[in-house]
Image (cartoon, rainbow, N blue to C red; front, side, top):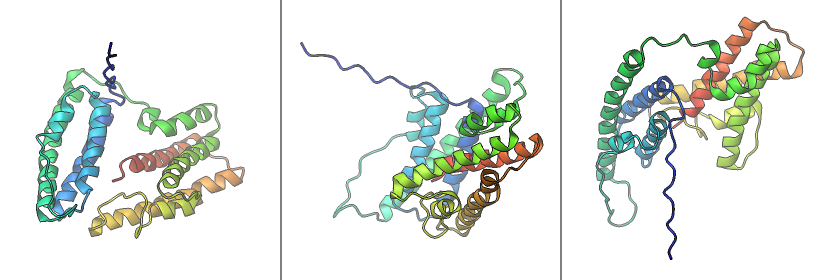
Length: 254
C-alpha cells in the first residue's frame, strides 16, 4: 500500500501588520526605483519579487492568497540560442515590476485601513517595540539591569555577527569590525547591495551606508569593547536605535 506524503505545513504570520506595512513600503520604493531606471539587469526583478513575497508571507501567512495575487499570471518563455537576457526579456521583467508595484500600492492602502480602523485604537508602543528583534534580544536584559554600555556593545556585536555570517557564506572570507563592513558594503564591489548601483542615487546610498556601518564599529563598538566607558540610559537608547536601523537596513538589501 502506497504511503501518502503529508502536505507541507503552511507557516502562519511571523511579523505584525504594522511591521509588514513598513517593510513593504520600502520594497515598493525599491521597485519603483528599479522601474524608473531601466533597463533592468538580469535577475533584478526576481530578487526584488522574492523579497516582496518573503514579507507578504511573513505578514499574512503562506496560505493567505496574497502571494498568488502578487505573482499574477505568468507563462514560461523559452529563449532561443541559450540564456540571453535580451530586450524582450527585459521588457517582460519591467512589466512584472510595474504590475507588482501596483499590487503593492493597493495592498498597502488596505493594510493602512486595517491598522488604522480595523482593531480600534492601537496601544502605545514602548521603546523595545521599535527595535529590531535581534537587537532587542541581546540588549534588553542588559539595559533593564542598568548595564547601559554593555547593552550597546552587545547590540553592535550582534550587528557585526549578522553581517559577518552573511559575508562568510557568500565569499568564504572571515572579517570583523570596520574591515568587514567596508568589504560587505563596498561602493564598487559590494557583497550586500543596498541601492540600485546603476544610478547615482543608489551609489550614494551604498557609499553612505558603508561609511555608517564601518563608523559604528570604529566609533561605538570598539571603544566600548576595549575601555570601561559609562553612559546613561538616554545615550544608550540613541545608540540602540542606530544599531536597530542598520540591522533593519541590512534586512532590506537587494
